[in-house]
Length: 312
Image (cartoon, rainbow, N blue to C red; front, side):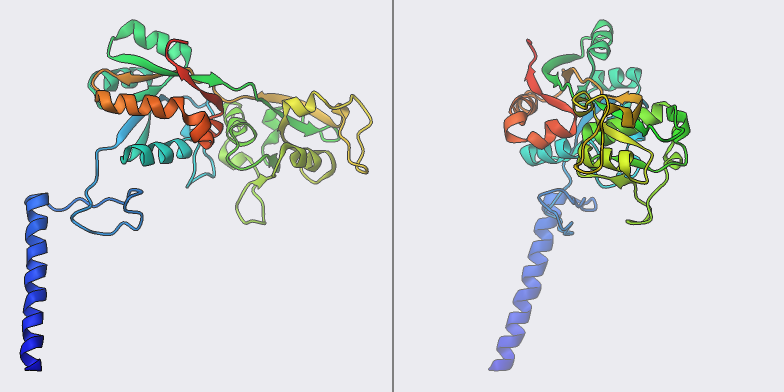
């Protein structure tokens, strides 16, 4: 009797497996199943019921002097200035979000043919686009953030320009900060200081030197073994002209030599292709307008203050 039950149960398992396979074929067709590793399948489980969804493609104009350009993401493999935006919008829409860096003519062409859904532009880029095509409409605007960083060298050093930074250690602010990391790297890149031009640290191995704040980066430049770094301009402006000392700790302007300013790129209009689904446009518009309150990490990582309506 027990033997019959085992055989019968085994048959039921086989039948159930075959049934699932049949349903899978019905859902996926004859083509090989397309698996997804999106946020709703974080483990990348190879189930034929978890299909890859068409990504939302967002275009930005490629520029080596922009903190939002891939050339500025030196040692940031897993995170970029766009990571928070991609993650948050992905959760909101249930679709993967891709950032596509393109030349202006490529961005225009792909907004026209509908391959791009949205694009982040500066005011100048948007004006040039709208003069050439009617294939995009403004759905929101990014509000500028007045933060700026100063790339400084110790007054005791011989460093007089950005070009002399090559081979030096560099005191960055917090990793991922739009000013004290990304915009600073972009400023160095635009001055010809490449990834190999900055000395990496021994501990942690093969990494750059990051500090928890501008205050700590300033301490390293003024009193430590690192001759150059970046600090908040607003903090520097409050330093006294002279009188800096280690104890009690106080900074003064004469301890630093200002080499350059680092500012995030000023984003302006966000446009949607006229081919983009209207419901998706409404969803993304709502996401952007509420980002300052509901997703503050999105606006801070992009180096902006928030988003406003297109009419402003």
